[in-house]
Length: 403
Image: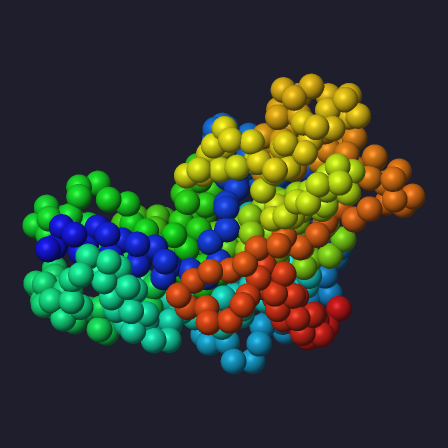
């Protein structure tokens, strides 16, 4: 009975409970850039990781009336505790990532932390045990296994001395869920679990940053802290969550006209807002209905699947009009998770044709149309909702700026 229950029910469950924002993540790769004073990111996680280059050339920020720590003190919400701890960790992240310590950049980070965790390093998930048991019940029902029988099987003691059932019943945070799964993975043989299982908890900490992103970022940009244990556990810490969340939000160039599109990217994946606008332009030119979700290619397990996407097929039908071969189109589409896609021949031709057809310059950014799915979400929420909600918090933060 265990061999049916654990791999099928609990693995699916834990993955589903991990986060309400599971975006595709880009792998950071620092290159020299002064596009908006922020360091260049990486190719997407679907592309090979390159060898890190020299630190980015960062445009110097405007001279601030206040030192960064004092400015941040003005911007942080009154309820933040311990105030000095959050302030110092944010300032240290900006210093390590060589980001301009402006009110706009500070407020962007503050707004995301408020939205994702209300400044809790290990945010509490209300009703987490009920969410877990409900999902387990749904999974085992397909095997006609009564839930009470499953709970009885989970009475086996875990390494903490508590039974696995007791630990599920008392779950409060994602870190506790992560620790639970880590113990189960370590005891895979004893529990008749498959060996070599991956931890399904993908996003962690106060900014709900992807563990995969954190792991790739440290290979391309030096992590400023020494830590013990796994990087996964470090990302659960306040300083780790702030550092990697800030990197994911700001440590790449994107010439958006409004910070709100970075918030959309944070939820949907880097450059998703630019790519969604590109998809709208392709739809306009081709006359084909496309969902502007920000993914120009199809992916499977983080890698291009090889199956042509609807955007890809629409572009192939326009190949003569674009003056590009199918292979040239695919070559440029593979840059979709990079800033370089904006300079590609394909992007430039499509956007120029869209401008010409409309008789004006069409938007270079748009909200990706993505529905958010998670057991923790009971309403119909989208990436656009997330971006606008964070944008509201961002505007409120800027009102506290003394500059």
